[in-house]
Amino acid sequence: MNTGCTPTKTLVASAYAAHVARRAADYGVTIEGALNVDMKAVKARKDAVVAPSRKGVEQSLKTLEGCTVYEGQGRFIAEKKVAVNGSELAADRIFINVGARAAIPPIPHLDRVPYLTNSSMMDIDFLPPHLIILGGSYVGLEFAQVYRRFGSEVTVIELAPRLIPREDEDVSQAVADFLKDEGIGVRVDSGVVGVEKQGNSIGVEVESAGKSSRIVGTHVLVAIGRRPNTDDLGLDKAGIATDARGYIQVDDQLRTNVSGVWAMGDCNGRGAFTHTSWNDFEIVAANLLDNDRRLVSDRITAYALYTDPPLGRAGMTEAEVRKTGKPALISTLAMEHVSRAREKSETKGFMKILVDRDSKQILGASFLGLAGDEAIHCVLDVMYAKAPYTVLQRAMHIHPTVSELIPTMLGDLEPLQ
Image (cartoon, rainbow, N blue to C red; front, side, top):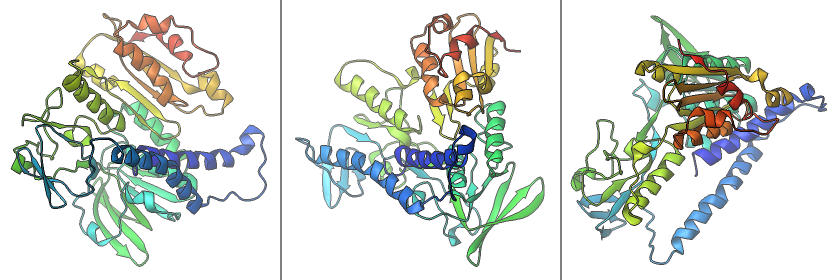
């Protein structure tokens, strides 16, 4: 709420406004004078959007009958006992939902420079002249495009051979292409081997293909991954098991190895999104309160990358489908063939759907393009219904929309070679 989805997507919206303003002539609109991005106003807008949600939750909890809120660091001191602010609390049922934070890599001398994380980025109200981002995945790429559109010089350094390596290669390449088109420097297959202060600047030593080079910027954002907030909870005193990375181990109903203790959200390693955390709550509440058996394994992978254009993802990637060896069908469509995209002059990206040839059920989809984060739900809902793809193929969608081309794509399926 304070440093995640809502504030970052509010920044994405401000950056989009700046981007469209610069492209105004493409739409036949003339803007007189230089474009100026007021970073203090951008931050103020972000804070104003966040505040009602945070205050609303606080007020709801603090006025809820039977609910006592303790604002402090809670730690287990025994199996069913927690200490906080000098008080000891015991309960038959305990629910852990402590979230995660940015993982900080053991890069030599990184602790000697004032680096930023996704959380501290929410506090800045100025424009970094040159932002160097360590990590070319979801968090890093969103900030990269946002601050490039605000006016910063931006360089992204990724250790893997390509950006967002968990995605299909065609998706990674398309994202890299449009980021480069906007002037973002992209260095892949590059490891950071050292960082040092250089006056008012920061030098980042990079090694790639056996060769070393230095990138000098003014600010560094560390976005190489997340780690659960479990290292100071006293889990060992409660006998609660974690894996090697510190994630609390849970079963398919999110129960820990200790009876009466559940773990939800980022700290259980079963998802790193607001929507997975909320779904965790729904699963626990259904099983515990409603006698309605629900399982984590019932849900379908779904998430979005909020670059512009966004990436909407559901189910399996093409690479994952290939690994199964199942006979499958595939259909792709470039966004330049979508009327809605042409009307808005936002034609970058493509849509891809994969289907099981025998069962006719949809296996997965990647929608990289205008409204891809919304259109993907057409596919996701059919997947949850376990309906054949022909149900969606025969649906009549509204014109002109991005979603109207999904039935067309499903009519053009071809064997996955």
